[in-house]
Length: 336
Length: 299
Image 1 (cartoon, rainbow over the protein chains, first blue to last red):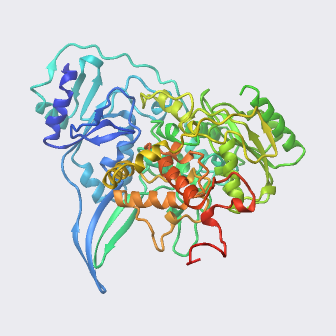
Image 2: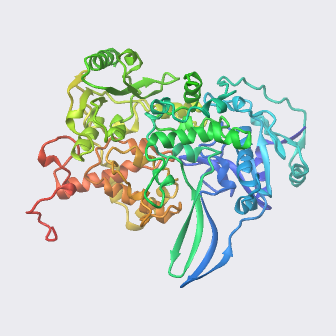
Image 3: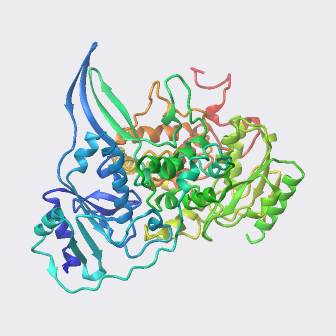
């Protein structure tokens, strides 16, 4: 098997970064995320933590993304530039959970007869170097959400071997191209892959989507939402939450339109022009988040919009726990 | 704190059984020993869910505005900081005193469940602290307002609240600018600091207004700083120092540093004043008060 020695990982990332934008799991002060690799001081490559606090979704949908520039004079308006961001990108070290999240984003942005050109520009040349996940954490439940954490569907799969470096398995033609660029530093070697630890947390969501279809008005939402304080942490650390808002920035006659992450937890998210807000209170907003994750997306795309990474559980300031919520939703009686 | 839970359940049970209150805002255990989480109890049969232990860090007063347009009486557990939050809500006319039955908790300081969750999660190598950051400088461990109280009176620690503020004040303007840019550039605008704040109780928040939109939604240094400056200025003189904003921040911005600068200035220029420690008329925040003899001419 090909192995990338531990002391060559930086060099490998530098080589790849010469030809593409490379995003790797980095710790930068109090933040960790899939940050663009510049080999800069202060950034620490984090292959020894389970995952990053911030998800990798910004690689294909940045939190703030310019769309087009315009000049508006009187009643005339002219688009002067459409800003799409093509170019090769590589995501390094992503785990099966976050990779499945990326596939969920693909469903939302690229299927059902509509292709989002801004998303597509960033997505089409994205190569994935995914990491087989042998040691899940206590908040991980990706297997229950259908993730194959040991065999992620990627261009290259890496296996972190500790001091020995990374076992390196190209899986696709794109993966072989990337591997060819590292020919000088990859070595052939017999190595034993790590033993996979069992995932302790399990939750069965069979039939939950169908059950939820009859639970929109169920009183349990009052109880479930009572702990939530309606901030947007869960939606912003979620690798699959993809809602965005389109806004404009004007200076005189010139301006630009941009889109930015938005959150169903915010009251303004559903504020309508006439003053009405269909999700006036937190119960409605809270319910929307969980129904989108567990029902609506399944109905539309036949896939889960929760991939079991556990970030929302880890980051919620008020200890809202999606596992507890799923279990309670399964328990309650629904009147026929 | 081993006897707090039994006492808490006893009090809550009595209040629900005799109809004094319709609901109790307290804490219950989560799925790990180091997780206690906010809980709403409406039935006396459920009081055994309640717990008061060293992980009950959340300021439950933050959840009270959810019930502002209703009429039921609410029992709420309140540590020292939380009780100051309740004073805030009463003074801000969010919640009338007579709708609340306040069960005070003399608080020895809490541990932060989120620090423990993050340490256990594998996403962080940091070790959780024995005492949460927000409790380190606490000057009001005992509730300032309550109907009854649990636990022994606690002594506040040495007042070192402004040590970090003094450091920032001693920086040059350029150094300060760099410091602010560095801290705020990582803000993801999740508004957890706003929503965790008991002083942020406006029905419509300025950041949710669209006509006009006061602060742009793009995440960039300018709008992030504008957001944070407006947020902290809005709670100037009203912040009760519960530290929930900083605890809730997912990217570790030292929000209490900015709040404490304003606490220090309000105390110095308009005080002496400490927010949320009394319901007396003259305890209204200086910047929320109208006086015909105000020394500023424009008043």
